[in-house]
Amino acid sequence: MPELSRFYEIIIRMYYDDHPPPHFHAVYQAEEVQVNIETLGVEKGRIRRRALVLVLEWPALHPEELRRAWEIGSRNQEPCAMIRIVEAIPLEGHRLKIRFNDGIEGIYAVEPERRGGVFRKLLDPAVFNAVRVNPDFGCVEWPGGVDLCPTSMDEEMLAPMESPSTP
Image 1 (cartoon, rainbow, N blue to C red):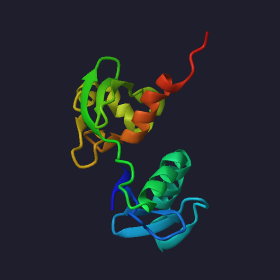
Image 2: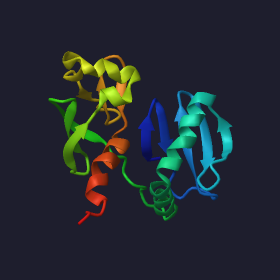
Image 3: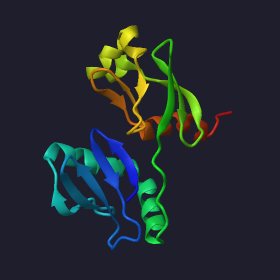
Image 4: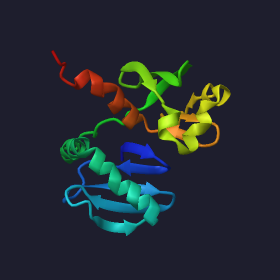
């Protein structure tokens, strides 16, 4: 069963040629739910409330990607590969030079001041420069459990390229 995304220890999966209605599976620790893509209702299973809130937020941010994965999977083909980071190099100004598994490369502004919370730790250059790519999850992470979702990073980096230019 291919993974579509992984964040905060939550894994979003979809089976090939799975039964209707269109749905995905979300796994958090030893718990699992099956979520209807159209209604975002839990069809089966249970997970902790805090994890469920994040699970139900994910499809709202990625509706087309999710529908496309279901269509491809229902034809017994592999759904879209999960976006992963394969290289991250720290740069000045709290920026990272990123390379994704699909070949896209670019500069990503982390903006720890704007993000606040645990990201404020990254204002320390020694902590920021300790960034690494987690080989299991394909995300960037820092000591102390600070990480960023590769799918969100990819979308943020592609957004300026896809927006129409103004005259």
